[in-house]
Amino acid sequence: MIEHHVSDDLLLEYAAGALDEASSLLIATHLALCPPCRAVVRDAEAMGGALLDGEPPEAMSERSPNNVLERVARPPADPAVRANTHGGADRWAGANLPQPLRGYVAETLSQRPWRRIAPGLRQLVLGTASGPTTARLFHLAPGKRIPVHSHRGLELTLVLQGTYRDECATFARGDVAQLDDSVTHRPVVDPSEECLALAVTQAPLRFRSTVMRLIQPLVGV
Amino acid sequence: MQALVANVDSPEALLHAVAARQDRQSFLALFRHFAPRVKAYLRRQGADSAVADDLAQEVMFKVWRRAVAFDAAKASAATWVYAIARNAHIDAFRRTRRPEVDMDDAALVADSRPLPDDAMAHGERAKRVQDALASLPAEQATIVRMSFFLHKSHAEIAKELALPLGTVKSRLRLAFGRLRDALHEDRA
Image (tube, one colour):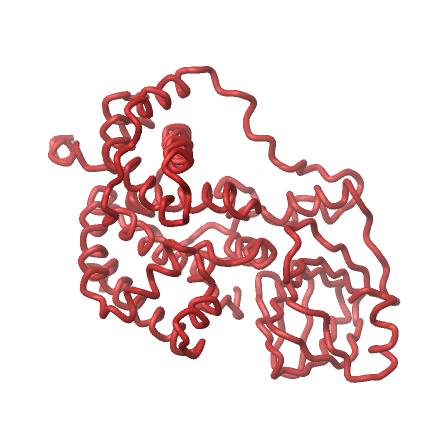
């Protein structure tokens, strides 16, 4: 049972097509695991549908209906090439991950491997459009503690396997933690199972310890 | 079946006819209704007439191809076409991908609550949403339009209207609440 959902504000922005690719990826992946949030997005899209229906029509070119009918009469080309869902040997490319994330992970893994950034912590920066946000998968060893940090701008984290907890709550598969710069936290992974999480950040994390801040550019978080 | 025939001209029924028997007349009726509106929507994004015309054709092509996936229990035809047009716009103008849920994915968690079996009533519900939208205070309607039609983020809208971000979010939430009430009024 998912306990931590995406805020309605973000679901509205997703439904409106107003979010960047990395945030949309996280939200779409949460939606695959969360029927109640899917219902919110469906309702929000109805606002777009009503706007479209109320739009004063603008005449189409005379040829246009026949253009489309001629096109649909042609045999379909190869079905849209979806990102490879096999993902080679890496087990995280397997069926445990829902779409659309699975496709992004498989595509990224065909270009670069996971990167170890600290003991018990690996990351895979996913191939989304460059911009102010970055989507990355974190793989954390059982019991791993992340040093105390806060965030510049909004950070979204979606748990895909295992659980972690911080000072406020426990997060399991499908749960989303939505953090802003007012929150400083220290997540700990459950000792019984490794944890896989998708994080979307608007800016680098801000560690409280000077040492972590100094090595941050080297480890790339 | 007679009950459905009464609604044979609704966009939802037309989409079903395209899905079930590739009915060209039904498609042309859909085209006449939606293509000029999709074109107008794309013109608002700054596309010139020829580009908007081409892209509206592309959207209608997808409407034909994906008609089998249309589920009138989940959305009205207008809402479904809106989602296709929105994604085509993101692809074409923003040149980024639009991550979407894959409803056929084995890893998808299915909805355990049954959807109401009133597929054909959806057109009517769409009308109610439109009425609710038309009755929104101007300050809410403007923000709904900037968000869903111009695809601006809440932060961008706040900046453009010189409003606090919280005001933009709360106005949008109020508008959404009204529309949800209109959508689910018969389920209360």
